[in-house]
Image 1 (cartoon, rainbow, N blue to C red):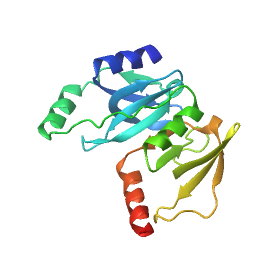
Image 2: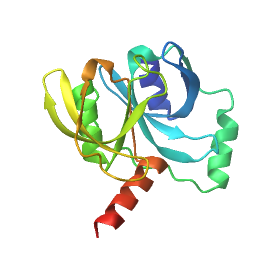
Image 3: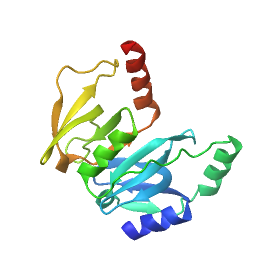
Length: 180
C-alpha cells in the first residue's frame, strides 16, 4: 500500500480510500506526503472543497482508488471554484509519536482519533508531553473551553490526526478571541 500512496503523491491525483477495519466511511483527497508508517492526506470534503489534512496509518488502508473514478469531476469543480490546495506542512510520518508532535507544531489544535479502540470517538486539543508509550493531551470542549486536566492516551491506539480543518480552526479562533 505504501508504494501505491507514493505513486498517488507523485501523480498529484485525487484518490479515494477506505479503512474498512476501523471506519465505514471513505476519504477523498490528495496524498501530500508518505512516511514509513503514516501518510498525509489533503482532504477534500463532501462539498468538494479543501478542508485541511488528515494523517493516517498506512496499515489501516483497505482500498485505495488511484485515481478516484470521479477525479475529473472533482478536479473541474475545484478549478471552477478557484480552490487552491493548501500548502502541505512538513510532518514527520515515521511513527505515531513523530506524526502527532509535528502535526501539533503545524496547527493550533488537532483532532486525535482512536477508531480501532473506540469508533467515532475523538478529542480536539494539543500535545502537552510524551511519556514513553503514552502522551498527555490538553483537550478543548465543543464549547471552546480548555478542560481543566490533560488526558493521557496510548500511542498504540492512535489511528488518525486531523488538523487545519474547519472545526479545529473554528475552536482555535474562539479560544484566541476569548483569551483577549
